[in-house]
Length: 365
Image (cartoon, rainbow, N blue to C red; front, side, top):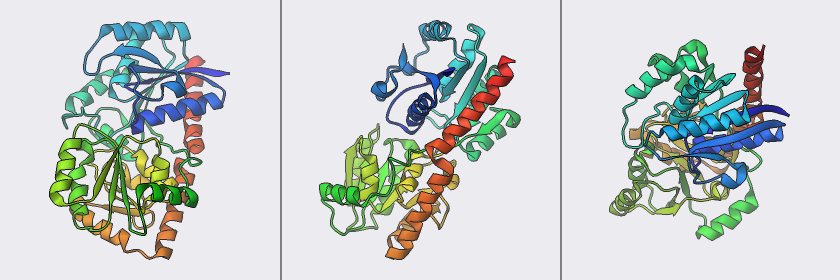
């Protein structure tokens, strides 16, 4: 048994970063690592899969009792590695070192701008990263774009930054003609071209860009899997534009939805390395995406999808929808090959394992 390793996360919800924490925990356990998951707030999802310990903190509230609970947990588990994910967990994982000895602390940056849900300002978060940097042994970014942005802002020195991408379970997300047939029937689809979007309905995803582009695609439905604070506003905009947008809410069958649809849409303003693009690639689903964050690291423009400016979103959709069957097959195959080569869970998990072993060997000498 290797470890122990504690994965400390701000939350456990059905989001991209949280999915990465869950996948990594299960993969590490399968590789013989003693792995525990700790969430700052009470989990919304994944509790049955990873049995997390909750610090019972409330979102947006600084509660010293959370730090006390974490110190108690770490003293009991005595991890060799504390690996934190997302802004609040990163800060707590660093600060706890002042009260509780931990041999190795690794912080993970999951977004270009780890801003709040209501604001685009990240300057004060960059400053907090800067002043606490000495308390982390390694800071890992999920894309080169994320690493460069934080280095340029002085949030982390480039020499301490590593890049390890997000991962996807390519055995679950895969092309599946039978699953496609069943899901298209369930969605009431015939031969029409169907679009899919997956993600929280919030300002960072900039769904209005997508909906305005969809207004030019009559006869092509858009399925939106996810929920969030802008749902009512986006439903109203879709009605106003006459868009056939079908809001599905949170879904546990995203892999089947990706099989059923013909193109994935991502219109984000802020990203790290979008997990939904990796899932689409593994599913052989071409995409149209804005170039936020590490999108260009996940999409081979013109080969596995199209990366466009927001003003060109409708043109990118028209280009994808106009492809012939053979062109679409080649794009689907290229997307799957990219996912297998760069983002497969085993490929990425091995990178984390090597980092743990190298950082741990230096700390334990």
